[in-house]
Length: 146
Image (cartoon, rainbow, N blue to C red; front, side, top):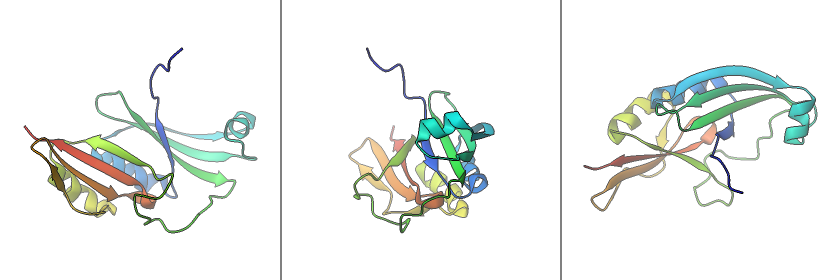
């Protein structure tokens, strides 16, 4: 038995509207919003009294989705600084292929994006960078060179 596909990546955020604006500027499409609560949410997450706002976004090709979740209850746990380096165990990032990395970074800066390093060239094949987005989310960008 094998998995069918990866359905989505879920990220907890403090401000759904700001996170949606960031990822829409990146080029994702808002698929919908909803609120999740009830016994099934408690059982699924292992938390009690879940009440959560959800926004689902999809990539333009329709193959990948990102679920942004803002917990109203139980209270969100802020486990420390959001500017931790990329090499902390359990750190995750979401990588996107873009057609113009410099333009993408410039468009995301007004939404709070900050480069972790700089745009780097990998041989003659790609330009790559990591940036920090809303709530400290690490976002990778890759531009394939022609």
